[in-house]
Length: 254
Image 1 (cartoon, rainbow, N blue to C red):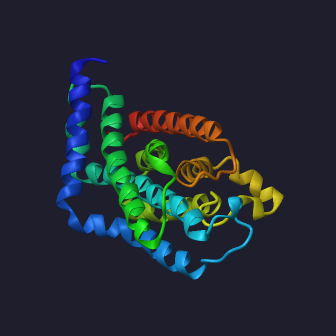
Image 2: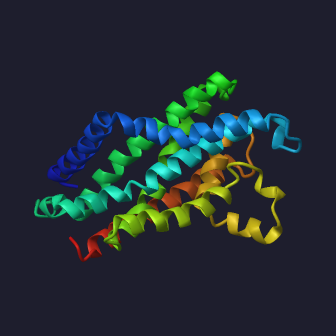
C-alpha cells in the first residue's frame, strides 16, 4: 500500500476521533442503553440458576452488554456515511488520489476506535457492580474481540448505508436488523436454553461468537473454544469489511 493511502487512512481516522471528542453528548448517549441493561438486569436477575460454570449473572451479563454496545455503535456508524452524502463531504474525498478501500479502512478504523472506547468504559463501570475480569491476558484478548465485533458491524452498517439515501429509513431498518442479532447472540441468556431451531440461527450470527469470545476471555466460561470464537469472528470481520468496501465502491451517490 502506498504511503498516500496510509495518510488517507490516518486523516479519516483522526477526523472521527475529533468528532468523537467534540461531541460530549455522544459519549453519554452511547453509554445510556448499555448501562440501563447492565444496572437493571444485573441487579434484578442476580440469582439465576443454570448459568455455565456456575457463575453469577453479572459476570455472565457484562460481556453481553459490551457486545450490545459495540453492536449498536458500530452499525449506526453507517449513519455518518449518509450525513457525508447529504452534505457533500463524501464527494469531496472521492476526488482524492486514493483508493476507495483506503477511505473505507480509514472510516472503519475511526469508528472501531470509538466503539472500543465505549466497550472499555462499560467494562470499567461494571467493576463498580462487582465484575472482575479473568486476569490481564483475558483483558488483552477481550480487546481483540471488541475490535473484531466493531469492524464486523461497521462493515454491515456500511453495506446498508451505501445502498440507501434516507437517514430516517436507515435508522428504522437497522433497528429491525440489530435487535434480532442482539437477542440471538447469547448476550442476555445462554443460547443452549433456546429451542433447537433457534440455536441453529444463533450459529450463523456473528455476534454469537464475539460475545462468547468476550465471555471466555473475561470470565473464563464459553460455549465454544476460544480459538473457534476468534477464528470465526475474524472471518466475519474480514468478509463484512470487504463487502462494505464493495458496496461503498458501487454506491451511485459517490
